[in-house]
Image (cartoon, rainbow, N blue to C red; front, side, top):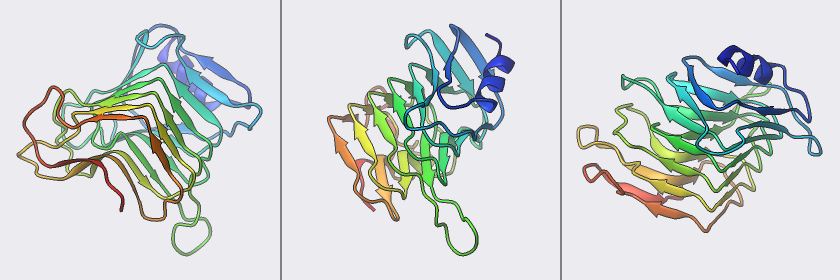
Length: 221
């Protein structure tokens, strides 16, 4: 599969589509928009057959912007491949009405905040449309280098929505370098987040990197 084929499949996805990426490494330096909705009975998959066979090298500021319901991402290694500190802020930015999105059995590596979830203004006034029921199941979230992006460093940076599930994940090595002293968290639900379930996760603040600033496991704000 070519990179262009994968991007075209994402852009044209319709309910029930299963986008199975062929084994290989794919380099992306762009915002990848996920805008077409699936359905509760016909979800859209972006997947590999087996974890370790497909890697997406991502080098944009935010890489996947998810604005659609009922997507499942599974078995893919998403690597932040950035040479400067002003990129690789998010692997995934989940916004607005992107309800019922599932991340399952992926490896996500080398981002400031691997996931940012927040609202979007619909009409006028403050943000009033938030993703609900996001599920993060059996993923490995970590960094193998210090991310110099001067932005929040929270692996799951969840600003709103309700009924999210964080289960069976491993979080490791997400603190900031001593040269960029900022607090960091593995899971940080805040703002208007309601009814989040966090269970059966392993959080190792310093697994292979021993230098760095304050790290928290689960922070409620």
